[in-house]
Length: 172
Image (cartoon, rainbow, N blue to C red; front, side, top):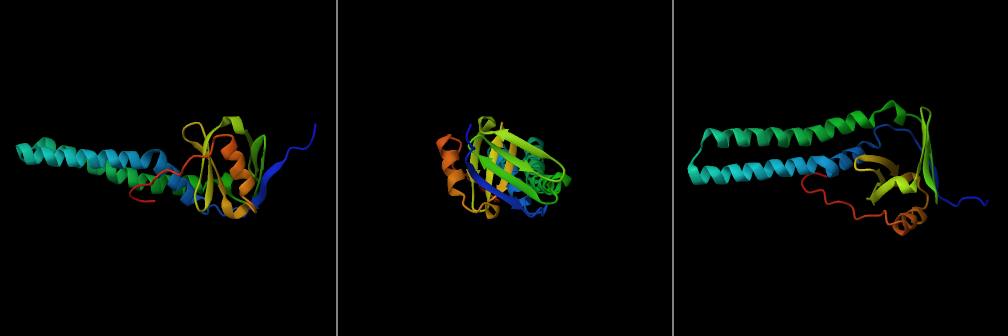
């Protein structure tokens, strides 16, 4: 059996805060923006109701609940991203290898190999690869640690994993 071609290989510097923007962006894409949009729709509907029947308790409660959801979805994205990004498993130097068969990360606290079949989609923005497993689990790979991203991009496209980066309406 021949050697498996390496698509990308490198080391990250282990700065736990470096991945916080990627975590924040993914959380916003996957849930925060939808909660915020739903809250804004409720506010608009409540205001339309108020214009139709006058300002009543139902309108006040609807707007209050929607504002709480709007603030919670926005603030929650920031808080969770700061907490997850500072995980002790992300500290120290992390070595990564992407081959035709899998993506592997090795750090001081843990190592993980995931075959490409487990990934459901992948996104790329100006700073990160987002390799999504299932609906909400994601591996982040910083572009600055990938000497030449083209082989990995081509591989993701061939496998049908590479998707357009979600529109982030509102914040990110």
